[in-house]
Length: 287
Image (tube, rainbow, N blue to C red):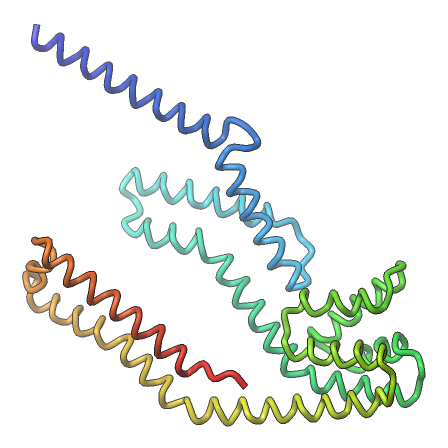
């Protein structure tokens, strides 16, 4: 009788778990408005934005599908016990592509900032030979190479298909995410609307950008030691804790066996993170 009751309760438990899994799958994937499709669509939009900023016109679903397939393979091997570091691989597969794309976008923005003054000076020299701003933008773009030339050539192509020059130039700033290139375009657009000696305005803007770059180099040089100290402050506690744990595995047990220990450990972690954030804020000098 007891065994029969145990079997009944086991069947009820398995049935309830099965219904819960089915309900969860229906909630996530039962319709186009399910949570899975919502997060999937947002992730695809995020990848699309990064790829467009890198001037890569490929469908993002290939990257996302490959990630999902690799995650399933890793989880399958982990279930069979063939992948001991499955959690590390899963983390790399899930966040690796987005991290790589973000790094490439940041490098592209830095490259645009570094050549914005050269483009501004080339644009000023082009305006000395032609009165058309559109022709000067196209000529200056052809004289340079790299991300700045690509962005401005894209603006020129937009004007050829019917978009106004002002709208095309205004769209470059949000697309490129470059502060210095935005300054060049703002000077160009304002000078074009207000009038005056646009060539002199652009030459002054180029000189200002060069001076800003020089000051940024001075600030980086002066704060280099402090940044190294931040790395030391960030790594030292972790290395010390790892060394103590390697010598004595029971040293940190009081922090994990009581409520007071958890409170102390949580306060220490919060103070550690807050200190690093505050140090970065102090060193983030805005010119």
